[in-house]
Amino acid sequence: MIEVQNLTKRYGEFTAVDRITFSVPKGIIFGFLGPNGAGKTTTIKMLTTMLKPTDGSIRIDGFDPVRDQGAVRRAFGIVFQDPSLDDTLTAFENMELHAVLYRVDHRARRERIEKLLRFIGLWDRRTDFVKRFSGGMKRRLEIARALLHQPKIMFLDEPTLGLDPQTRNHIWSYIEHLSREGGVTVFFTTHYMEEADRVADEIAVIDHGTIVAQGSPASLKERAQTASLEDAFISLTGHAIRDEEASSTDHMRQVRKIMGSR
Amino acid sequence: MSAIYILWLRQLKRYFRVRIRILSALGQPLLFLISLGFGFAPLYKRAGAGDYLQYLVPGVVTMGILFPAVFSGIEIIWDRQFGFLKETFVAPVARFQIILGRTLGGATTSSIQGLIVLVICSVAGFRMANPLLLPVAVGFMFLIALFGNSIGAAIGSVLDDVQGFQLIMNFLVMPLFFFSNALYPVDELPAPLKVAIHLNPLSYGIDGLRGVLSHPFLLGQAIDFVILAAVTTVLLGVGTYLFSRIQL
View 1: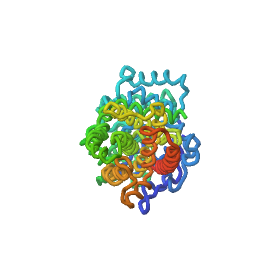
View 2 (view 1 turned 180 degrees about the horizontal axis):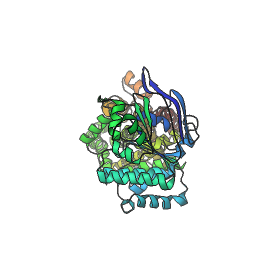
View 3 (view 1 turned 45 degrees about the vertical axis):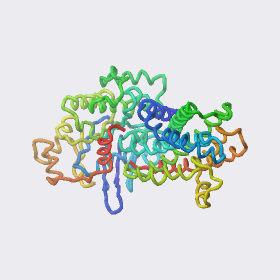
């Protein structure tokens, strides 16, 4: 469902992603792990048409994200690392907007929105403004929204970041449900190794822009001779802490905090 | 088409839901209306130039449109940083549709803002020369709004931080407004200022609006409209181009 060959992204001298090759078969849950700054988000951006690769090839459901942007975009749904809802709109309006952008047939629209909002337990809150929602509710809504156009592939960039254990459990159970019942191919990143261990059928570990290991969680543990995936991860990527520079987004968050809401 | 419509609608919903913003955007033009409008009226009259309020109101209405319009365009920065832009960027919708929907929405809300200012000015004593020309006036107001939104969109597409915001207010939007014919007659000004005002596209919007609101309809307004429309089209093109180049 996802085929990546020698994918490379360079920014001037710096190589963010360096000739990575992997493939994700249809219907599996694929974990893409790596320390901060390893190239995870850059890879996701290339897979999802947001960034042009410097080199290499990508096939998403058979289409090239550079040449067949439209076809690729219709094939996947995505939950970004940062919230991407409009919080001055209601839950329902956010769903509706997505449905229109993806040209979901308007007869199917309402029914599908209702089904998904019930699935994530937010149907009763559909007329509430998103700004009143907690982080977990927003994340659930984003998952529902990404499913609205019935994608074949679901990208989730750290879907459980900053959520409490209850919500994290819920979110993984939705994701597993999608994959097992719906046949959706899932591609996710996370920093929570025990979560990856539990849900992923297959894992690729990326570090410094290259894939350093790939296989089922069990095989990775076996290879690294460790009891937990976390230990395997550390033995693969080393102990050094990766410092990321503050982005302008971090700065803007600060400003927003000071200025109140936008 | 439906994508443009839903993004236009989004701007309208946002506008009507944040009422405090409607109110705060009224502050500045009303301040100008009251302090300048009434403050300079006696002087203007004694100089034999007529009723200053009739002269000033089109300028004040323009102010009421321009500032929120530029701001609404620049708001792309927020959408970009807080993610909503990503949602639209991965959707199977062309970038120009996204920016068009957004800009038309912003132009609509800024025009509404201008209409509110016009209504308040009428309460304060302003009289339209020919109320039947109101639709034409609205046309000019929408064009000014589109002009401001396109500038804002172009800027919002290249800035990735709110740091530069004050700079743009002080060195672009303020001069655009003050070096125009919004507040004073141009005929007897020193040559450099006169040239600047003639080069300022906004002057044509104000001239047109003033013609429609305060004088019986003249041919000159058609030329005003054409000039501002041409400049706005170019700016919208630039904004669309810059927007299409945004990388998240």
